[in-house]
Length: 105
Image 1 (cartoon, one colour):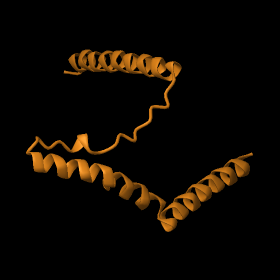
Image 2: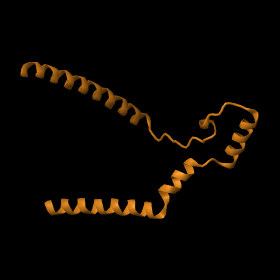
Image 3: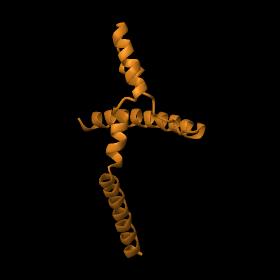
Image 4: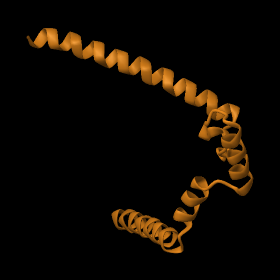
């Protein structure tokens, strides 16, 4: 049983390493970074027009928003519940340690 678990962990790490290695070697990661960095031709023209007209420059006006929200109502509500529970636990633990420290002193 232990050998199977160790073998599974080994193959998972090997698979993760090979995936990361291929992503790095193919340049996929750098391509995505470059795509985020570069302005499109249309955005460059709009920027140049705004410079000519003396308008205020805000880079976020020219970059296209590529963030896609894939969350569902279930994941959003689960996240909210998780954050609330985390806040309550943090308060409970910090107050508990304060009480514990009074007994230690």
